[in-house]
Length: 78
Image (cartoon, rainbow, N blue to C red; front, side, top):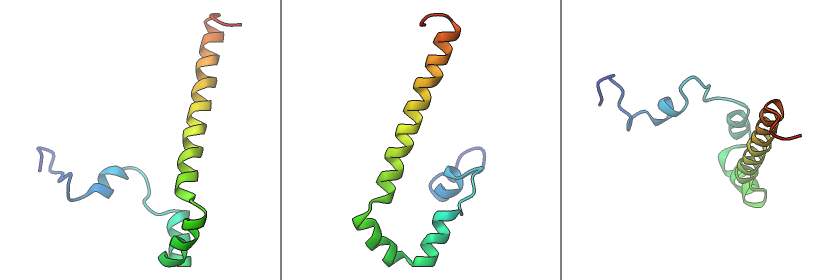
C-alpha cells in the first residue's frame, strides 16, 4: 500500500477503470449469451482483435488529420 491508501495490486479494475463505467454493452451481451457461447463466436470472429485494430486505425488517422491541420495552420504545408 502506498501513501494514498490505494493497494494497486488488490484493485486493478478500480485503478484501470477509474472514472469509466465498468459495465456497458459488452457486459450485457456477455451476460445475455453466456460466456461459453460468446467464446465460441469469438473463436471464429475475433471481436477483441477487430476492436483493437479498429481503435488503432482510428487513432492513427485522427493523429494524421490533427497534425495536418496544425501544419496547415502554421503554413508549413499547403
